[in-house]
Picture 1 (cartoon, rainbow, N blue to C red):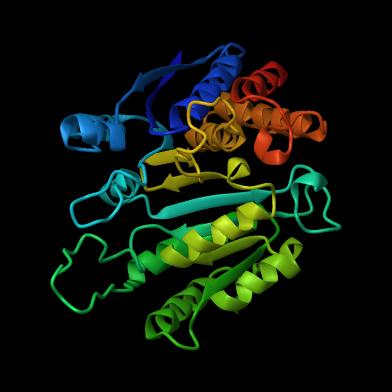
Picture 2 (picture 1 turned 90 degrees about the vertical axis):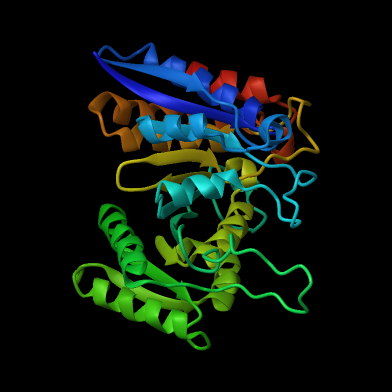
Length: 350
């Protein structure tokens, strides 16, 4: 029997609500496995933990994440809880950087035509994945203290050869698995850092002659994702650009409640919905758990055991089957299902 040890971080706001549904689905697929089991250990992290003990990511929780086979995360932080310098708490970013989870994976798939604000797109016609470099870019100087008395503030956009190479290589490997096309998103017409990113991308591309490539400026990409999202397959970009474009892309498929994500390193990975803590709806039982359930499927696939990979497919198929029925909608999609009702439907299909 193979036992996978999973660190569970419900976090703040709706995080606990959506994680509970993902755990429900995990237990449903686990019941069908014969050689795999899951040991789940929950840890307190986020704004509530900060208010209680002064640290949003306690050393014990971080150590558990580092030792676990994978981490399932809900959401962390609250707009009203900030550091003394005015910034929000972002322990999820601390996790990425301290565990070197350089590969931000953001799959975007349309499950029903009614979910898309654009016309003429049916289920499956929008299907691409964003590879976001997670550990440098415009986030690189976020921990540098700001002089509160100064008349200016600066951030640094850092691109290293190692950082650019490994995210581009990850994108090209995925393109070979999918439809063999990679789109680089940069701002190489203006920023020297982006010229360098493009040079590294081109050097990596030479090792994948079977993969089609294109290069698009980030402002144009915002336009093209609205005009022709169906033409993209794998997109690779810098940290901040990936942060912004992944939210835009989520809007094409029904919103943040439909957008899963993974932050992957060499030996560790965190799986979480792309959305935040949504304190305005926390505790109301109306949050959409689909993004978290799909993040669970990413986790099971990443664990790379025959039974977990099969379970990931069952979850993805279950989500597709549930959402094919227009009656199965949470409030963000125009329906009336509660968080637990949606989780029940997916678990029953697994």
